[in-house]
Amino acid sequence: MNEVLEPGMLVRHPVHEDWGLGQVQSRIGLKITVNFEHAGKVVIDGTRVELVLVMDPDA
Image (cartoon, rainbow, N blue to C red; front, side):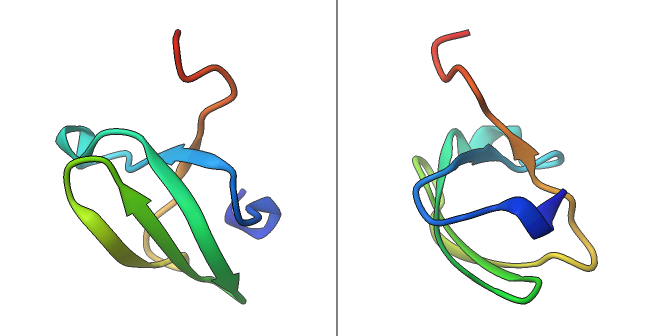
């Protein structure tokens, strides 16, 4: 799933729900930089973490 992520897409971390909603800043291969509401900018190793795509942030 991480392979389809593009800058601007909204995601959540499957383990750190307290980080809040995140916006993908960049993806180079499976290295994904996400800016989370409550955790700031985090670089995710896409080989270890499968981010959850958020289609409707108000749901």
